[in-house]
Length: 386
Image (cartoon, rainbow, N blue to C red; front, side):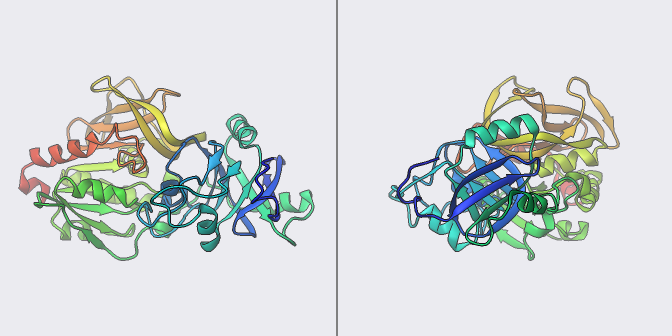
């Protein structure tokens, strides 16, 4: 347990996993009770972007880096309007933030947004446990009256909803459409289906002269084509892709029209389903900013940012016949051979499972936004706006 003097007088806290494993520490952030799916992130930086990524909705994030909060929190690095994680687990929180951009401490920000956390536990042991047993439900109990018998707390954890079967994208997506204008000359218009989009994604497109119309997850085909798009984009987001029937139907309608299409993360899983592939839950997922992925068209290996607990079940080494022509796996994770990208050979559509916008870095995969603009350049305007 950490010996931080700042945390010495904090309320006691207990982390309880659904398999009965228990970790005891001190409260961090808000005091109270929270439940979610326990997952770990291997990033050593970018915790503010992680916390505000809507893809982490209903997940309790364990940071594998031991020191968290060193650079504080600012108002510029948020990926959305709020923190989405259900809970936060750190080993050794910073006593005092030190960065010229810092406006307040991470502890204060978690507390002000009501995010329950725990500090002072062995996050390495917890991470090893999750790697061996898999992501699972978890509860954090902190403060007087919430820490009770181990049996009582475990019973509450086992009553919490599971991530498998969870339909969450509409809970985090925008309720009203909005526009992110192109930076400089407008070259393209893109209709973006928000399934849990991060703020840096439309910004990366705007940098390339794209006017981005961000639409709710409940958008219709008519809503998409009302903006007269040169391309359509499906964003990242939380939940089980097996429940995402509306986005799948929406993507199939776009594929039928032959509009250039790009999807990331949840959008990759949606494309997989639209093409007829299945999806499945990974044992403990990919989360962090140091995942090696190979672009199979070039052989280049990229270090990439990930946040996904589900994946597409598609054959790695063969071209597949789909209702929309031939498709192939374009990218693969070198750690475990998980599908990290799909590409249609007969229509202008592709997707990747990871995050090329990667606000905190790395930026190896930023070229994918250029690939999207090139795709829009090659399709005649009539075909784009059918």
